[in-house]
Amino acid sequence: MNLSYYQTGKLRKIKSLKLNNSHEYDEISTKLLKISSPFIISTLAHTCNKSLSSGIFPDRLKYSEIKPLFKKGDKLNISNYRPISNLTSFSKVLEKAMYIQLCEQRSKNILAEEQFGFRTKSTTNNAIHKLTNDTFKALNNKLMVGGIFCDLEKALDCVNHKILLSKLEFYGVKGKAKLWFESHFRIRYQKVLITNNEINQNYISTWEDIKHGVPQGSILGPLLFLFYINDLPTTINDKSIPILFADGTSILVTSPNKNDFQINITGAFNCINEWLHANLLSINSFFIRRGPGPNKFTRKYFSNFF
Image (tube, rainbow, N blue to C red; front, top):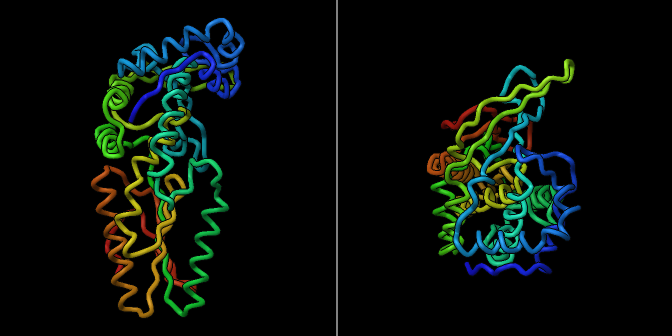
């Protein structure tokens, strides 16, 4: 991967950062950064170029503040909260610079076409259309149709840095770019901020080091996660039709007879299990449907079901 360096004019693309007043420990918001950008654009370009040319992500930009975002369920259960990372504005500038180059040079022809999440011009509607169209096509051909539907448990938080870096290198991220990502993940820190709105009081944890995961709320995080699970479809393509949307996975299995169907769906199931084990990920929940009909089996973890 050949990194290009930024002139002040090209760096103005980074002004697409979302405008908000939130800030991290440095107390510099993206709104303030944009307002002051005409005066500091040359310095920003120099900083980006120095970081890319040296393969070093500045240590001062490796701090993030975590704000738990409630999803659903019991509010007293911490697993029902999503950890959103508030990163420094300057780290977002550097991430945006690398994100643009990673998209331009690597993601277009490498990311699996079965993946519909975190991609431009791709929505849940595209994934749903693919799923329903392939299902009806198989039914019209008088085939048995079954599906394995699973949701990865805290997928972005469980990404193993060593595995991710090896996959990036496999996809061509080498040289200074690889060093930059190694530096990006090395010795990062985070603290948790919880706000009690009733009494208008904040509770803040101590700084702790981050051992795994890609930050939710970061610019590079979603794209890096796509690279992390990019090889999942290839492990089951010969046995099924995988359809992915971010960390949600739908797998269709079709067959003209029951015996072949059971062999194929069990094979796909085992392949997923092996892939998850190799990539240190786990399933939050899943169910298997053999349809048409009401037969539905739900399990919390992977096990033999035939």
